[in-house]
Length: 210
Image 1: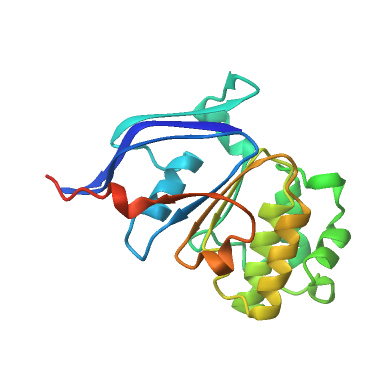
Image 2: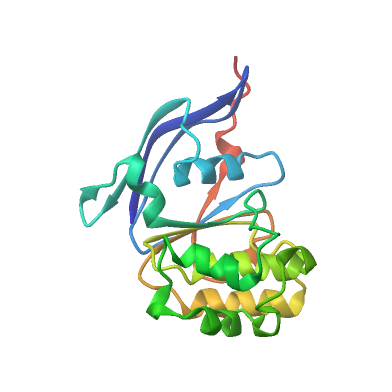
């Protein structure tokens, strides 16, 4: 997926989170949105996902030169973010089956194969409220990275992961590029961005104007 940002900005109340940001994200490329807490990287990622609308400027999504309307964007993206929560009253199996009912996994992975791939086959029939935060993060990352979609969005993907799980994430992401566009928001790129990526320092576009 190709994404075109034309002079976009986002304002909450009287504060501009960022402004005058123009960028073309090429199809099949990787981009890292960098910055500390409050820099606006998560806000920008939400705009890229279609969840938020920019206050000013234009954004367009394209697949093979065809513009994707915002109403159809959700079927073309996969997102893993701290504010995105699975159904904790469901089991792992139920969560995966629900997800697969509206978004396909790569190579037609079965639910059992998926659970093995994320290292949680032993917990397939446990409810998620019994999972640690690291196990829940594995599930969220697995569903996003293994989705068969042209745009993958990750927000601080290694949060709640120990060193072994961080290595698992690196390997999973590198093994499944799937000819797609990848955008990762991070304040720790050494942990979060294991592949070559164009970097955007979001704070550079912060304007404290009314």
